[in-house]
Image (tube, rainbow, N blue to C red; front, top):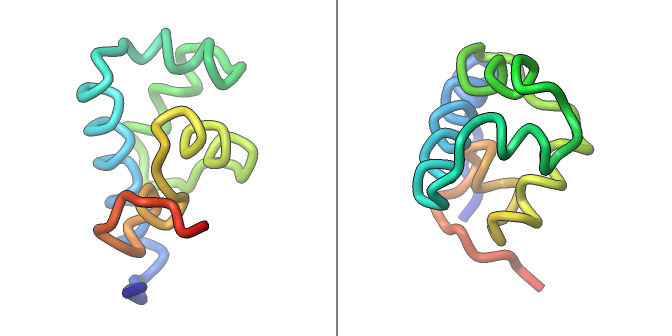
Length: 83
């Protein structure tokens, strides 16, 4: 089930989900930044601010963590990717 959330709340949920996924994987912010091809400072902003990540970063993160983009964005609580 997909949940409709405001852009503001989606940004808050996104940063929380990114931090949660990173910690579960045992990675540092710099390791994730390197994986998606950005500077550590830029990745840190994704976990601090309510801004939504660029699409290419969302896709890379979803692929790496094997979750759906909808999960990262807080549109669903299901991590599985629908195939």
